[in-house]
Length: 183
Image (cartoon, rainbow, N blue to C red; front, side, top):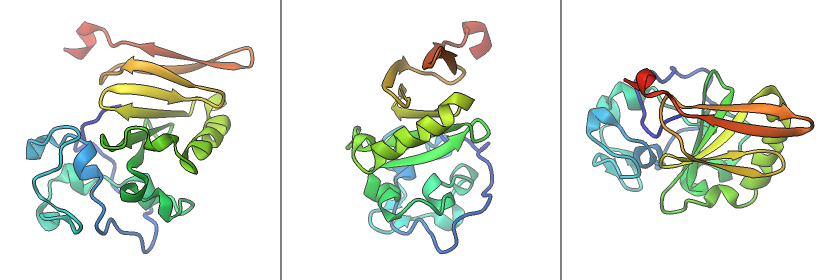
């Protein structure tokens, strides 16, 4: 639940044959990359616009180990490629959370079609079993639920986002990490 890539990213498990980043470098913008002293929503100084990573062969493990959902999911068409969609998707929490990370130049891109309807379908299928879809614009998060979107405010590393059923309605709890736990 972070806009910072860390080297704890899982190694690739089954990338879609034939798919490559190509000229897409969305991950080189939306995430902070500590090893490269790169902040959130800033282009990495090593990006060669239209060509991708200029240090691909020697990029840090943080970059080497990250693969967006478009590279992993064969059911996503070309319109889901991050440089076209203007956001990227990845999973965390053992696959139970899908994170949508929009380009700061198109912060509402995830609300366009065909994306928004698909996010709602995924939410309908996954939310009852606590599968989450969270959109992060910097540290501000929005939970996509089947019947509505919930602004969670600022979500920091260590905070918890928990879904719970109240009758037939899914409620979202955002629990701030205690200051003792963060230290």
